[in-house]
Amino acid sequence: MIQPIYLDNAATSPPAPEVVEAMTHCYTTSYGNASSLHSHGREARQAVEESRESIAVHLGVQPEEIVFTAGATEANNLALIGTAFSSGDRKHLITTSIEHHAVLHTIEWLKTRGFDATILDVDPTGRIDPAQVREAIRPDTLLVSVMAGNNEIGTIQPLDEIAAICHERGVLVHSDAVQALGKIPLPMDAVDLLSISAHKFHGPKGVGFLFVRKGVKLTPILHGGGHERGRRSGTENVAGIVGMGVAAGLAFDEQPAASDRLRAYRDRMIDTITQLPGTRLNGDREKSLPHIANFSFEAIEGESLVMRLDERGIAVSTGSACSSPNLEPSHVLVAIGVPLSMAHGSLRVSTGRQTTEQEIDTFLDILPKVVEDLRSISPFKVGE
Ligand SMILES: Cc1ncc(COP(=O)(O)O)c(C=O)c1O
Image (spheres, protein in one colour):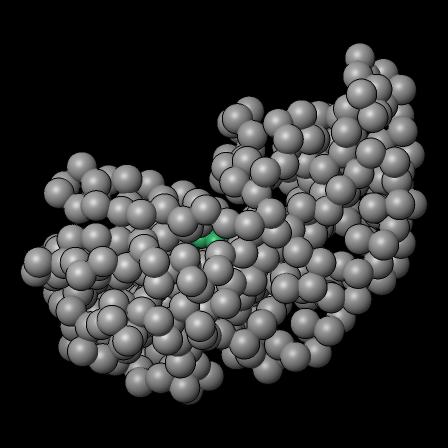
């Protein structure tokens, strides 16, 4: 029987056993509504607040600065729409061309509601130069949103320098740090708002949070019972929040060691795969998240590569999982200038806590054979 090898942790990661155990306990014993006055409710409230407290301690922030959400799509929407609708005369936002669609599409929507935006181009490795931010800031700029590390190519952005420029001009800084937690230190000193999603670090799906620095004005986007200090209405996802707290604790504790281990896997993959003819690394070799590597292969369709590897028990993705059913080339690869033919032949490999050296060996043994096989039936030739 083929042993499955899961190398798609940037799309989602398997929940840690400790997370499943804590959530099961919660579903079976602390099932109260955290707003109820009786003992079941109080127990649920305690579980929610303990999780908030533990996350805040790990981040070095205040518990009141954490707003629980149903994941990072909501956290990004709340950060951007929530500050935009509290912004007074400041109606201009700045972001980059390689953000997740949860940022880019929200900004597009804000443009239909009287706001303006500048989308900064990135260099061929996917980085923006802080000088570009300085030039783009206008007197009416409200916020700059720059992700900590890219979910498709892994590139890390110079957030400290960007934030210093923004804060000189009274501009807020938001970062989508979904792929960063547990992989690199989070840029907490640089940001005013930061989005996180639990399922990217071995927690449950459908739960995340937005860090909102004290004093930042935020108009809620969900209205109702006034939960989360009026910033996010809706009955708390108690088990999800507890699971996220456990997952975050594990991820923070292991971060430096995990980072070194996953980076060593990434280096090996890059060294081996870029030796194959007609192959390139997309993104930056050094300034990258340790768990994401993105390659392009000439004369091959990424979808065929994913399907052939899947037949051999290996799960990887082409582009980002959120847009995989869509055959348009990834906006990130287009933005860093990957030629269209090569953007179509892209593969994202992303490792996680459960990844072993042996799995990387197996992947690196199978991949060249699959590439050669697909090229032998391709109408295109390498180097054409
Ligand atoms: C960088 C980034 N931002 C936002 C999201 C969306 O997060 P969620 O699945 O929690 O809505 C993802 C997930 O694909 C992501 O990788």
